[in-house]
Amino acid sequence: MAMASMHISLPTLTPPNLRRVNRYCLQSQKRSSVIAMASSYKEIATSGVKVTDGEGNLPKVVLTGSNGSEADVYLFGGCITSWKVPNGKDLLFVRPDAVFNGQKPISGGVPHCFPQFGPGLMQQHGFARNLDWSIVDSENVQGDPVLTLELKDGPYSRAMWDFSFQALYKITLQTKSLSTELFIKNTDSNPFSFSTALHTYFSASAQAASVKGLKGRKTLNKDPDPKNPLEGKEERDAVTFPGFVDCVYLDAPRELHLDNGLGDIISIKNTNWSDAVLWNPYLTMEACYKDFVCVENAQIGNVQLEPGNTWTATQQLSIN
Image (cartoon, rainbow, N blue to C red; front, side):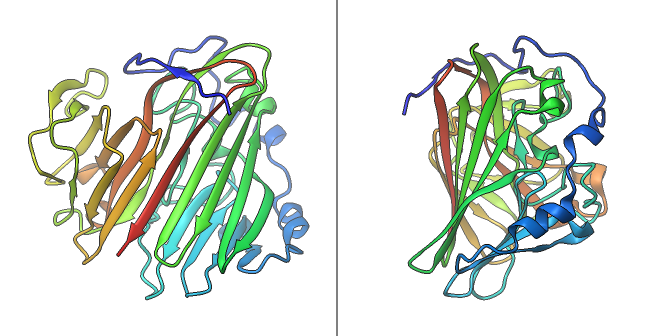
């Protein structure tokens, strides 16, 4: 598999052939019938993989491990909204203001940011979290369900980013871990560039939570001015969330440890996600900020991808 060359160009993505569009323009073109979609997948016979109607009648895939672990994956946005370990505890968080209407991204779980992380020339965090993904494969490996989703370009995406691409997202649920592998392939005749992230929301007691593994890393702190992040260096062994937090960690390590303040230590391992982002909205989201923190694997700088080449990155969330 050919790997893309990468260079850092901070803080925003500036690929060619972008133009501003309203977030909901072409909505009628991109939206298929979610009821028909759910029906078309309900005959999947893979053990531990079941398609059902989720909130708002959006198609949802329920993954069930042989030892009692469980995960929910919405086809809208390719969004994992729940990860329960065998004791029934859900380690992910969905915000109370999340909507499940197929018009707005699902706020919570593990949303995709692609082909743009953060603000820029297109809608916030790109379009991948605002489109229907398709099931292309499912299997069961020794009791562990595996689901592969696909997203391709269409009128909605091309109105913002005029390239042909294929994204594959492989999700594996094991007894005490949830792993993902993201593939981005350039199926266009021209090179393109993108940035991306997994905007993971973890259930937490925000004031008691901490993240270890970031000491010594270069930081881009977006508090107080997101448009002019302050460069710095992390000096703390354990990064906490005492108030508003929105900070990028460049060249992050391959493994972080989140103490969620609720009795769990979550290992966050990755390959080829170059950076990490910590976020908690504090009083700007007063209804729920105390109940979650975001620890995100990200590719902040532009990935330059030539025609026919593929970029891939993995994430593994696990507890002891």
